[in-house]
Length: 328
Image (tube, rainbow, N blue to C red; front, top):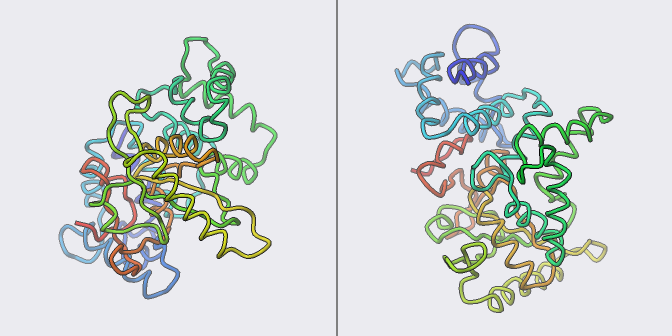
């Protein structure tokens, strides 16, 4: 893809008065804070790292230079999704194809460019652990139109475009959102943070309970629950009991959701905990980075105070955080 052209397209969306620069008042329109003061602070923070020459505005050259550097370690597919995320913050409608590409990338855990059997087993195992193998085989048969044992991006898009051909854009976006993230916001939540202590000390999703994973090369998914499955299950059961007790009497049962930085380890934890608890544990697709980019609030672990800071989980993932971030 032409990265410079893609970034200039985003710049044009931000430059609302067409004067050739992105200024503070235009950056305020992309802020996610619910208050005017918060929006101003976000815009000032963004301007501070985009404005390379200190003239209090952002030129096309500065915009391209900064985001080209941020995306230097991304392949073209990752960079394309990175640009689409930026467009979301400008209010630009997201196409069906872009939404589906995001879903595909969340499923393609090993970044091979294909969804393979082991990845499908992880996905359906979060929904029906006892039937994961058979369901994975059925899903593969539906999507794998050329019968090479894996699902390409084109095959994935073709099937979903066919399934969604009679839906208008609003209905289609809702359906895709459900695929990306099963959380409806209408049920009590038990949030499980499976990131490292170093990441969690910067910020967490409010109320999240820590559940640790440890490398286990001989295990099916390469990780095991630290302290053993029974101990981890006991922690989650206690959180479930507390959440249920605090919920409104008519509320539905709590939804249990694991998250990491980008969704990969969250998927492993969801699979392992579903097996240990014998209940469905979901993975938050895109992890806390996607949640934060979409305006989700995070709190400092030490005092619970809301902050605008997120540990990216690794140097290569730093560029995935598109919202202003005070973590250094």
